[in-house]
Length: 219
Image 1 (cartoon, one colour):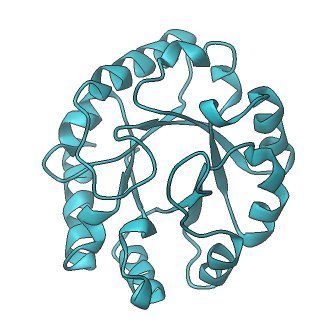
Image 2 (cartoon, helix red, strand yellow):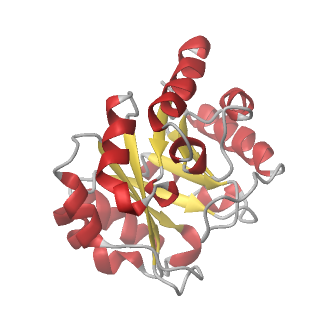
């Protein structure tokens, strides 16, 4: 199943509730929330108060991407704010296994994230334990970047690895995803698509429906 996860990092924060509702009402299944700490990545975005304030606006899945060093410190607070999925970077966790287990013990779905230059083989020991792998297709920290072409091969390699193990793990991609390249990403093996600028620049409803139409054609 193909899922769309509009990233509010691309939204107009003056009209955040309105735009999130537009994307949700148009059929987006997830809302993607990029939490940045100014340490693991250069930018600072938002945290629990913003997530909690949006939780009453929609019942869509809250897909929280933590670009935060040692994110295990915040798992309980993120759950309280309304997270449904928490994804943490391999590169940001000293004890990745412990952090993944914290997420699952909190009753949430656990995802792990790889930066573009991090090979998928680092997941070999933990792949069976996670619900989703998020492959960054740009370097994390800023919205509006262009898709990095070599990450397409990483998607293929990860899907093959999952298939060989008999896993139906979701593969999410984040960075430079547009209606022009999403078919190629789907064919490579991704099934959850984060889109910021491609959703929130212009007509949110029309942009959302354009992605969903492509998904329907491929299913």
